[in-house]
Length: 85
Image (tube, rainbow, N blue to C red):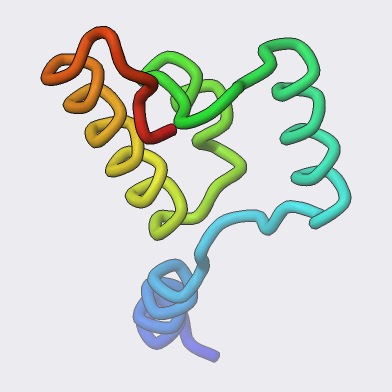
């Protein structure tokens, strides 16, 4: 293929490349290693969520964030009561 026709093909291939995929076993091992080194009970705090965020999908991260917000709200509005999470 002539060089002037190769460049668009390279741009298309570069645009389609999504980066290296991780081995599912490595993701699970990393997730459990993070949990073992920093145990989480209930809805994770911002710092705890940041620890495990690389191993979670966007939907689960959003749900865990919503759970933390609800827990924090419960603690703020009813300090003597047990929070939702």
